[in-house]
Image (cartoon, rainbow, N blue to C red; front, side, top):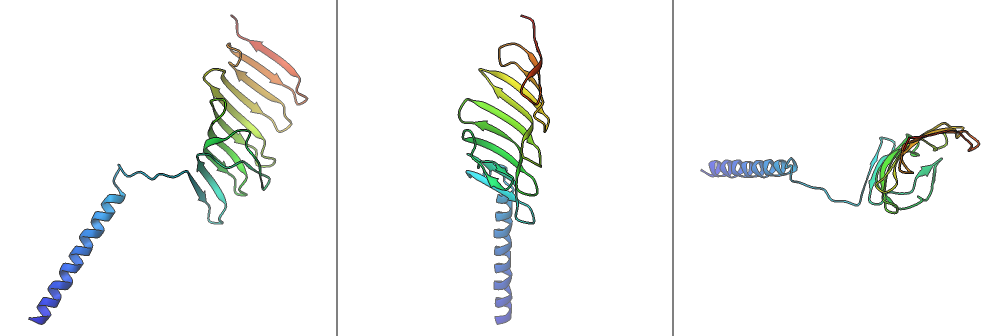
Length: 162
């Protein structure tokens, strides 16, 4: 009788633990579950920060040195294997802009940039490492295409008709 009682107690304990584990596992898959945080950093196997999500995000890491942002921003940053910023999707706190950038690996310069602002329109920049660029914009209230040479001179400016 004593052995039967012990076996029953062990079985009931095992069933109770199993039910508790199933309940906890079900909670983890609950679509209503929300994780709240001001930031999240995803590191690779070497411990290098590869993805940063924040409100606000850190300043950009350029050539191994943390810089300051022009204005506070929130969003997602993508970093290269060396931890340097390679692009991101951000909303800027000052100026009501949303910005999407892709940066070069060598010097951290932007090579592709889209800026959207309800009041100032949208602009697309495609930039070479020598600083020549093409810009498509609606900044002045009408479509415009500009080619900008590496010395800053505008070699083509074509505006839409009014």
